[in-house]
Length: 425
Image 1 (cartoon, rainbow, N blue to C red):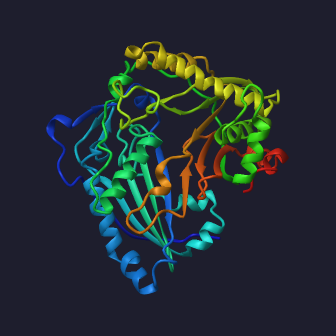
Image 2: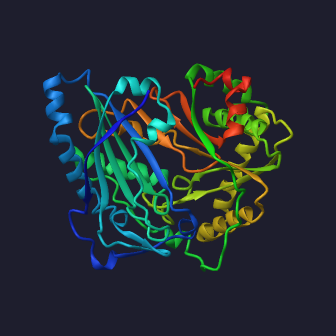
Image 3: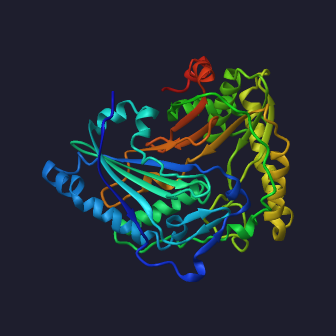
């Protein structure tokens, strides 16, 4: 299947109210400033065929009503998320209300055909192309593309600068935007206090380089709820009696990725952990915007096959280690976490294989209702060359894993019998 896209329009959307003078400069936190100029991207798919006849469909969806509602509510939401309408200069965001990019497009492919074979290369065509002129001046920091399918349905792709937002921040933004689209009061009231928690660093600090990789492939693997139940049973042990669905799925994916690796170098495994629910609210708001994460690491030998329950035990221990770092002395928790992460990063070398796992499960994306119902499917865009992004399946029980690997490794990975016993493509 091919996907021919027709560009309908493109517009810069600015905040509905100007940003006050005292908020027009925001320092990037330590880890924000070292992140590459990439985007966190989610694509939300909506199918209205069952709820609207063709006359209403044309009026409410294909017509201007929905687009105008999205633009107006986006402008309103940007008054709260004002840094997204600015521009990055060095380690500072100039919150100058320059605006965000809004693109409208349509295709002659029915939504049902696309969802029947949602290939990663086709997904990329639903995402607004980057307008980055240079890494330092990354703009726009937020870009949205609304794509209408033939007969019924549309997709909303939201891309936000990873130097400002992590996945939780993206979820908070979408929550406020959908509230505004329905005429409701904005619920998030975000804060931008992360530079206080992770203070900016001297620019002379350099993070260690990672292994240079050849071209990569990204593919989706689907774990149904029944198969996850079986996997959880296999991944549990006396040490971890009840492996979670995330732990069991992550352990299997990592095991198969290491088996498929052709480098045979030592591997560094890191699993992104959101800190908002772990840090006491008197030290950091749960509505903080930014990359509020902790990156624990595991060092493994890719030539030695690891058992699922052993990997789950190690992943669980990483969580306990984080809990201990937080409990020691809350007054210095940010400094302590920052120091722990930096020390682990400096243990890495360019020769090491790196596997990054991020879970988007339980994020609010399936509740994103712009006033015409909730998404029938949610897709993530991988931002790293060797990364796993876990997303809820649309039943809320299964998991979809977007896996990015070097091409040769992907061929071995996607034919792994242990993986195919529990996952479909």
